[in-house]
Image (cartoon, rainbow, N blue to C red; front, side, top):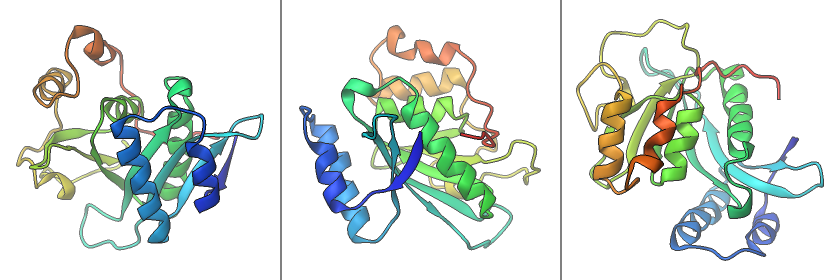
Length: 203
């Protein structure tokens, strides 16, 4: 599978052929904004030439302190009939690998959906707490072998002053309290081992 830079006509074509939920409409509406702002929107091309997963990730270049530069993960979406088949994981690993090669050392993101939580979990990312708007804050290294200060990561400071990310048990409580998950079945993915966080795959 290869990457393709998406434009407005390609995003319109991506929307066709499936029934969209309120969250689908909200997320895909944001993609229009990202395109308008010239943020890079990427699609993963399946072997049949169809794009079924898209994402927006900006490569930061400023190193203000020990915590940067950051890759800014804005959004990800996969067509409903093709979710939980590894496409979003593959696409975002490729984008994060590229960001790391360009000098980014961490990734930051705000999660607004259950699918987003599962995706970040598969990628081995760190969760820190919930923002005032109800999003889950991610601030995570792109290389676990790097050394970091024993303080709260820069992008996590809006939700916590702790120096360690949420444990699986704490994350489960956050997911239920925030309405991301409703019961044990939706939390079962936390029983498995999260991704390594070492995003250096050749895909």
